[in-house]
Length: 201
Image (cartoon, one colour):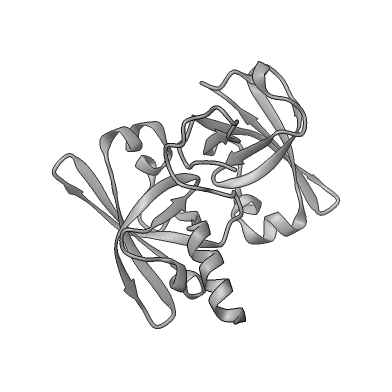
């Protein structure tokens, strides 16, 4: 389980195809790699991956064909920056919202504009996630916990706006997004479970 509070911006150092899967190497800047163990869960751009090896400033992951199909990882190249968060421990402060690291869909940045000292961004997501996106609800974008300001249902998609303060822009990859850049989306866990409960009754 994660909180959506990014702890580091890592960099993809290598991507090696392996019989349909890929091995990914991520370099770290802020996180102390000595505290990480093989088998630990780590959120990389919002996707929960399992550490298969590590060094002081590098983490290694195996990414399955299933994960490649549900994420943008198949399009990643060395040099790409990614948001990184270690899984919560029992003593951690809970700062964002409950994030599973299971990607629900892919989105794209439609527009961005300045609003006082903040930046507002409008994203478009697949229609399938529309029931789970609500005004003042939570959403995770590339591993970052954000609050939805407004929602607009389109014929084949859903559009929503989020507000990013200067700190979030400076410590995550979201500040570097350009129009039409694609992102990972994870809807609010509680909204997903409530929707499921209502539909099986």
